[in-house]
Amino acid sequence: MITGEQTEEARRRGSTVGENSQVWGYVDQIFPQEVVIGRNCIIGSNSAILSHGPLISADGGRRVTVEDNCYIGYGAIVLPGVTVGEGSIVGAGAVVTKDVPPRSIVVGNPARVLRTRDPDELERYIKAREGGIRRMANDATD
Image (cartoon, rainbow, N blue to C red; front, side):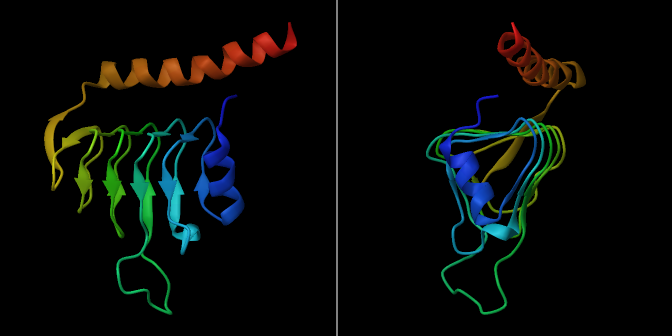
């Protein structure tokens, strides 16, 4: 499985990164334990997941959760306290200031729901992500 250097670094620092997820962007380094990324997620290049604001509190950061099967696009920013619902897509450059409902596609600054993903579309994404694991595992044993 291709995980990427940032994926392993996020895990080493204390973030939870689920199976078959890839982190290519920035994950908060002050309170990394407050970042939870589910299975089959892609966190795009130049994106940022932040668990703290400009005033760093002794109490710690605010939990940020990216649920299973999400895609965070290039340059997107997910702010502290936000949950990105299962199966959602955050468009390139979006700034996510509040929770994203499951299976939503959000865009803009601040991010707003563009549409809801079709269940078949989401199923194809999941099969492609999980199929990639099986293909790579089979290639490694051949």
